[in-house]
Image (cartoon, rainbow, N blue to C red; front, side, top):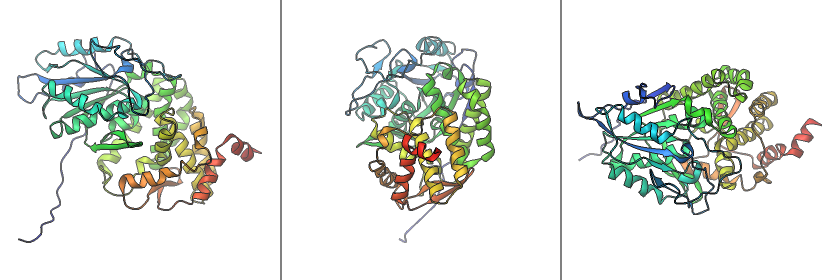
Length: 421
């Protein structure tokens, strides 16, 4: 028999919804994206919730990833060490009670055979691979099948870790995401990646699996600590830099309103960012990153390494801001883009309240190891997205380490002072 090479495609539908107060019993957004497999029979749903939404503290894990996982009704088994700037993102009303009330309001449409499971937010839930079995056990015990639903409510890390469990249970059960941070609503919540950290590397273990639906509810953003509110807008800057100069200018004009947390100004910026990410994933030709280019990871080679170097003291958005600043500075030094364009990007990041330097950068030596880790993650040749100008990206396959060190050095307080002198 002769050899056979057959190309084929799998059809997916990506459902992105924008709403206000998704858990109000009168709001049908969540209900309508979860039809039952059998007419007249309620759809089974297993809920997972970021514990920062229900009174937990976002904790910093030890290197072994130890922290707490709890089932509704058994909270308080373990105390987490909180970050200094990490207030509880408590929902305006008790969230667990609201979930129960929502399911109870639709008895013929939804059933919840398992308890609501709360898990630590932030990178905690991604740093302990042993938790994956716990997540899977809850999905199994609730009798969730391929036409049942896992609903995850939380920040990007919680979406990533529960997404991986949903992707491998029965080789894939339907996942509905309710992102609760600006970062997740503007970027990661819309993505098709799921994963956890391993071997000291971010997202080493994971899968590509499109969510069944994503629901962006602005109510969850109203109680975010300022630090977490800010973080999502760096992903808006990122996608504007590589996709749309006019959108970049909109963010510049909106910066003051974003800082004041004016939802009428900020929410359209979040929505446009989500739409751009969705467009790239669904129409960009490489949703599962089969090639070596990763344009949506502009600024991320340094960001991922910085997060590891600081043991996630830096939030993802904070690390991305520094990563973007490094790359536009390098691009200007290499003559790829005008210095005025690079400064404009950095000025916007500063206007949004980001720091563009962290002491962990040091002399840049350890950070530069992130280039090889970035390349290894996909394989093939190194491909880093840079800018020719705002809105016009270019792929670079070689990095001048000496110039990159100078770019990093220029962001230090001393380097900034020299540039201004």
